Image (tube, rainbow, N blue to C red):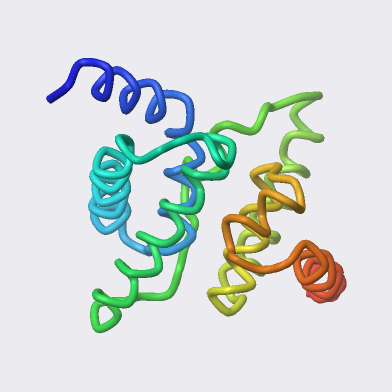
Length: 165
């Protein structure tokens, strides 16, 4: 194991671990499956690290790998699939602010949003998750392999759809 590569992987997993856990929760229902998917993503990152040349940002590169691994994993494990339930801890990286009432209201809004997102088709779910992670339109386009215009159009449609839910 090359030391630089190991250090890079550890840094990536520390920096993007919460986002990877949220991604896993968006694709898999059971905690065990989520953990297995996270390990598959870590292995894919390890394998891809020597080929990373910086053509895209590190974050975009990581999300592209993570989402592609998740799609493959879900496809391979489709017969064991259960309905998604984002459960506890999926939004652990989001800051808590305000008094108890506002925190409770925010938690309820997040639960409703995640419930609506979990019912979206996989391609739409991927786009919304990338948006919620704060990726730019250009980054989302690179991760998903579509144009920025397509990203903007789909996000606009999805926002309207999610507001109505």
